[in-house]
Image (cartoon, rainbow, N blue to C red; front, side):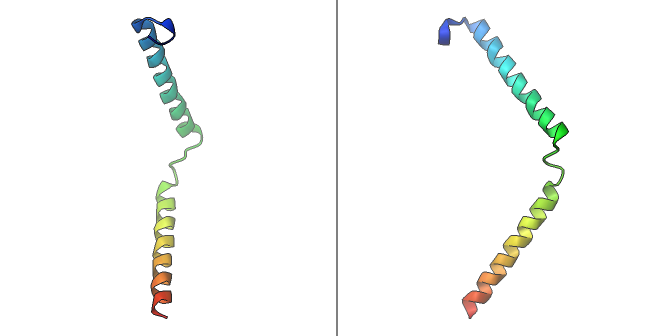
Length: 62
C-alpha cells in the first residue's frame, strides 16, 4: 500500500477524508446557501441568451 499503510488503515483514512469532504460541503450549503437563487440565475441566463440570439438574427438580416 502507499506509504507502507495496511489495507484497514488505508481504508479508514480514505473513509474519514470522504466524510470530512461531505461534511464541509454541507456546511458551505448551510451557511452560504449557494443554490437559493439558482432559479433566478437560470432565468437571467435564458433571457440573456434569448436577447443575444435575437440581436444576432437582426444583425444578420441587415
